[in-house]
Structures are given as C-alpha cells and as structure tokens.
Image (cartoon, rainbow, N blue to C red; front, side, top):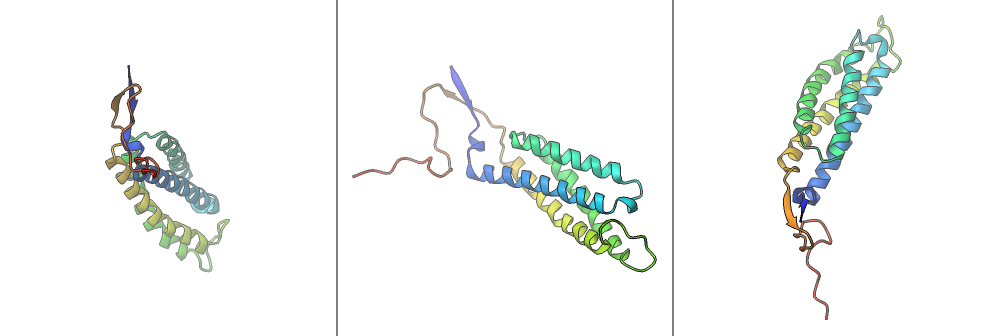
Length: 164
C-alpha cells in the first residue's frame, strides 16, 4: 500500500507563500470592511460589491489554508481588479475633505489613506498568489508505506550530523 505525499507543500518557501497569501487576503478583507463601514453613507450603492469582496476573500483564505491551489489565480485576478478600483477611488476620498461635502463616519482623509494603502496590498496579494500557483502545491507522489521520506528544504529535515 502506498502513501500520498505532497513534496511541494513541505518546502519552507511554499509555507511562507501560503502564510503570506492568507495574511494578505485577511488584511485586504479588513481594510475593505473598514473603508466600507467608514464611508457607508457615501458609497452610493457599492456596499453589496464590497461585502461580496470581503466574503470572497475570507472564503479564499480558508481554501488557501487547506492548500487549495485553484483559488490562487482567482485571488490574483480579483486583487488586480480591486487595485484599479482603489487607485481610482483614493483621490476621490481626499477631494471630499473640503467644505460643502457631507462627512462620512470616518474622516475622508483617513478613508483616502486606507484606500491608497489598499492598492499596494492588492498588488502584493496578486504577486503572492501567482507565486503560490507556480509552486505547484497539488503535486502528489506515491511513496511506499514504511519507506524513508525524501528530504525537504525545511529546517531540521536534512540528514543527521555525524556524531563523534
């Protein structure tokens, strides 16, 4: 009987990439939630879209945590789309920081800053997702039961040092 192993998941670079993608998805969802809550009265019907993004990012973070590689290109595409939207929306929040405009729940300058910060976060999410996709987390290797495991690049998994 053979055991199925995923050698690319055991690599330190894959684990770091997985953690980075999850972190960036959660940070993105958090930033979008704060911007949505802070600018609720001024979003002019865009609330369902932002809730959709938050929900999608949370679901994708869950699937990435389970080593699902299939959501990574979707995360990259959505991140690129939202980066463009945030790049356009950021200056509009700064323009609202003048007399004569209705004030949202958060100061427009803070909302503008958060929206501008969202752009590089989305670009990093896009790059990390594509790096994770290229790492081929889905590769499976059949290993006979009881045979020694192949070495990986994780610390402490190499050969034992010779003892005198």
